[in-house]
Amino acid sequence: MKCPNCDQHIEIEDWQDLEPFTCEECKESLCLIIDESTYQGATNTRLVICDDQ
Ligand SMILES: [Zn+2]
Image (cartoon, rainbow, N blue to C red; front, side, top):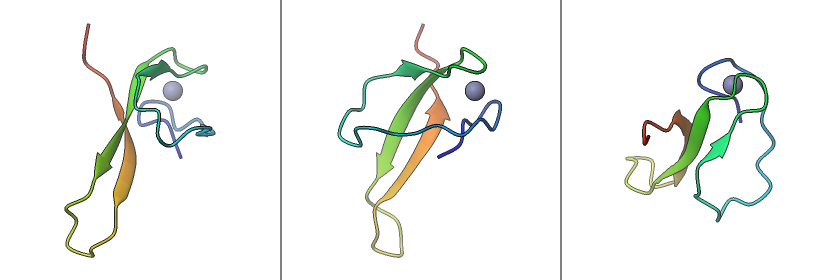
């Protein structure tokens, strides 16, 4: 998984934990998004920049 802000590799330790966390490289606040409605029928998990202030 890559940071969407700085492309730093991020190791996801707990895929069930959807709490926002901070990228160690750029200090951006990130969160995991799980999209279960992809047309492939597979669950699509991605990292996005969390805008919650
Ligand atoms: Zn980053």
